[in-house]
Length: 493
Ligand code: HEM
Image 1 (cartoon, protein in one colour):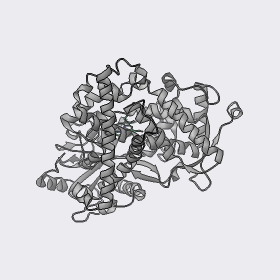
Image 2 (cartoon, protein in one colour):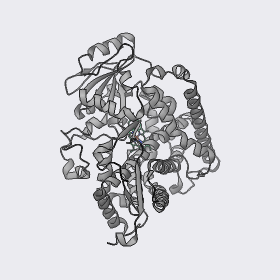
Image 3 (cartoon, rainbow, N blue to C red):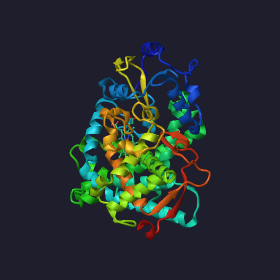
């Protein structure tokens, strides 16, 4: 675990950042009182602080000093600097929930894990996952069709969560896990609960240490049970897979198509660098980070299409051109390159909503930024993407939802770090290609089959969608929609 910086260093960091614009700070707690609110209010509160004091702001939480960096030129300097490759101290809590894997590790440990994991997320391996993504997308479509028959209004997020979680379980852990396995069901339902605990603690410094959290007995009991159940389920899967590989020489002898990510790691020379416990931690990390982000990205894409019927129709037109009329044929990997407009819509969703909006680093040596300020060592850095992704300097009319911004001719000249939904530099998202393939395939499975609509009383404009922050972004009050089956003659014109 990382230690807090020494007292002298913390004082220096506080002193040297004092001139940065910042909201009111109170003794001992700093700005924490401003941020200790419900998750429903959190997004708006942080965004107001960023808008009032950005693009370079100081926020203090207890003894920690954060510099919030929101200009793309400064973001690039931090994300690519060797002085800022370690994660923020706030990740100490995340480590307990997610495991000691890529998201939370630092230094040589992180480098060793990244080297062991990256080859098993290679394009050649991901290509074989497309048929699983498609199968799960069709499963989501049939769940939605049942709601179409009853004409009900419902929150689409949990269904997207089930689709994402099942895809991840099958592609990351095991392709032969039964959906009715009670441990698997318990595991999947625990992921969002674990992340809730994280968000609750991270903005309440008095709950950050385990001892502090144990003073809240009900929450703490629930938290410990979730952790124990999660660990034992993943241990079981890793052991089973390892035994199979040792006993039968699998997965080398098994058709490549049916292998999950974990089996690739176990079979690879690079993966041998991780022992069984490290592998458990890594799987825990990947499942946790991939599931919430993929769920919210799909739910927000559907919600956006429900609000913007014109964009929904354009996506459907493009898909019928690629896959054929009606539901079309099954998506193949080679089809994805022909879904240019669909990709632009997904990228605009990632810009507009910044699915993982907040993450951070720590600065190990003084770090000079292009804007002129030097971040003192011992400071934590926070990135708040909703500010960066809506900066009018890079996105004219930033509050307008416009997928055409991502056409190649309209992206020219934009700073590469003005669009960082997957972070950037050496610690970027290792699953970014997986995520884009998953989202495109699921959209291609559902949009030809169903029409999405916002019920009366819902937001008429994307600008009016209220957002909640729970590590990832979701629609406050639920992504409530209504769906209709698409009849064949409608698509035939
Ligand atoms: C829409 C979906 C996704 C979004 C928006 C997203 C975004 C991000 C962001 C912003 C980070 C940096 C976090 C930080 O610095 O603390 C990150 C890291 C990471 N993501 Fe993703 N992610 C997505 C999906 C996935 C998927 C599907 C996987 C795995 C298959 C994945 C695995 C990871 C891992 C392992 C890291 C840590 C990388 C490292 O530090 O070396 N993510 N992601």
